[in-house]
Length: 188
Length: 188
Image 1 (cartoon, each protein chain N blue to C red):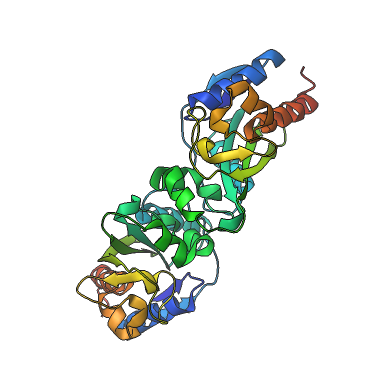
Image 2 (image 1 turned 60 degrees about the vertical axis):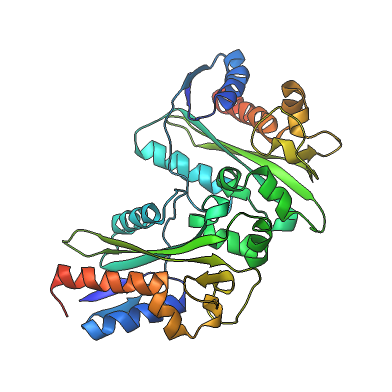
């Protein structure tokens, strides 16, 4: 089997490659975009993306979308995390948290996969944590410098990649996706 | 001619009715949603909405989308204004402006219209202004209490509706739309 990974992020591509190649799945990178809709859940974004790509005749594909959901901000930036990062950045989010009651938050990652002649797979996994008081660390990307996963005192950006992947939303989602794929295809 | 106004906002519906009925255009309210995409401009949101509704067989329709674009926040909340209002509210936006260099902003409104057998009309108009230091006024809706239009010292929410409509992004866009419609249809 060969799967087209649709992402503009090389880091994500490598994570998929590392998880899928050992299963005997060929991984191709398709650097195209898909239509993201304004909805409240990542699952809907991914569902819609799969349908749109399928309508364009692109099959055997994998897409993913992630977001940071902050309790004190009613889930902001959520499905609009990429836009909030581009405009407000980590500093803007920290400013919004000044005086907030509680700093609870979660990162969520949804992975969608559409395979010819089979039902779509959509899995979502989260990593609970807290918003840090300041940006810390140089690793990772996006909101990693302000997210401290549960049970840790370091931000994602302060953790070695392998350590982050072991507990991160994307790491968990990739493992769930691989399980679902194995069940579906019987491949191992 | 009869046009279907697609909006969930009664106030907007009344503004369209007031502008179109005098031109001999029948106005019907169609309380349905359309797919909003994650793109950077309101024009793209409206373009896409028209196409999607047309694909569903809904014709002779008018949709509109508005947003507040703040210079110091790189255009945030922009096309995601409705979501930012729901999660952060006016207070969240004011907090993001603390210590900002400059308070310049603009409200933009885009109106799209698709008429059977005719090219789509899309018009966009803006109202320049400043973000206020505090929320002021009880009128209007959305970000009106924190937006002071150019040449004014009151916020939109402190102005009588007729006064606001004379200078607002939506007032201007409705007038541009009516002009475009008259040119297109020869109706007056």
